[in-house]
Length: 559
Image 1 (cartoon, rainbow, N blue to C red):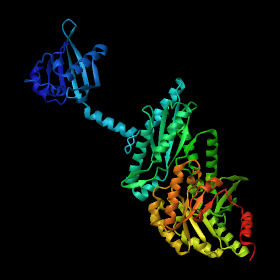
Image 2 (image 1 turned 120 degrees about the vertical axis):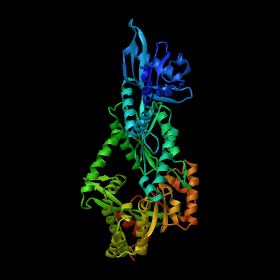
Image 3 (image 1 turned 120 degrees about the horizontal axis):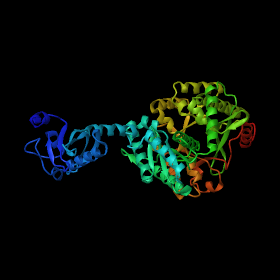
Image 4 (image 1 turned 60 degrees about the vertical axis):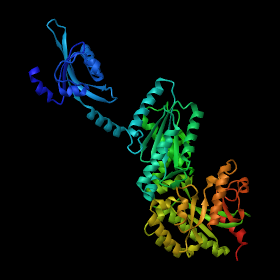
């Protein structure tokens, strides 16, 4: 063998043989390099090599033990360390060479360095199971861990919970600020969720705008609530990205607890998503809903209604009601808001159920034009009967406002009903402009030429409402009801609301406070003489006959 040492030294694989006492008998250059050993003559005997090289000590010990237990080994992979702190993976083929008495003369082995291959495998594995953007586990890995948790919950008295976090307006953020900005928002969310959880919990990004948290033993319902509140507080904390301050993360949470009744992870994730969808219907940012059978029934009904609206070609069952907007100081009538209502199979469908479905199905365009034309005809009727030149607020969806030709259709409706555009306020949310800013702004300017005025709905809850005020043709701000609902118990809401009102007044906007339901809320509002209010404390949405009666009282009857 020795006469062929020059050939063995050219091998990229390491070759060596050693005694049971770990004296290295022969080794080629590749093996010596792997073991961090130096020899004047490669392929020469190195007594006590195991004391000279930590790597050789590990390699020889592992191989000898494997051979003694199972005989010759083939393609056996293991990890070795070096004294300098580095490490590598090797793949070994090795066997025992007996002596004349049947004992062990020496051990021989071929070693291949597979460190690069292992690193590539690890990289591919990471890509398969981890989200590249956030570094969090992806849906596949989370599903695997959830499956293991469900099995554990059946064998041991452990409880688990899932929290599904669904972001809102991510696509709009990407369109308005750019995808890189949106990616930074996602990284911020991932970091925030991790900061709220324990080492035993698992946080994952399960889709483009969905995150999931698997909680192990959240210490019962009270402990779970604490974690949920921690998540909500973190996500509603203002943060800065590229010198742009965002007030909060817009999201909704769905929770399942406990998980004992679930047999597979997909069902659990589905139901957590249904709970999050239910939370979205509340229109409160960071609202949280627990999944229940009632939630499932509602989800099934929503699906059924979605099918109905997708196939619906008429507006049978829909009507319009009118909610008064009044002067805060004395309750005097100022204007109305036209609101759609739907009765399906003899049952009233709540607006917070059918409006999102109409948005998703595209039916909102037909419904929106129906509400607009009905409201305009009602304005004309009120003017003829009572001489009332009262204004009307009409909600306009993102899908309507960004649609080509929408201003022309509005012009046709105004012409058919004989209504001047200046008597209309189109209410839209900030998301209408995030959807397609240039097209929406173009249509808004065309509508302004018709006299239409604009009111920004849900003000104070978006990502960058203040920046839009300088760009949009807005005359009115409708302050989100969430600020009013917390007035009595949350001093911070009173402070924030005070500054919002002051800002709106200083900039010359008409301000409408929505959601006023109690006199105690009204008493906590400042600048009453400058505010308009809307809410159940004064009036619920009125059917046409009740609105007629109110207007007759307001105008003193026919002129």
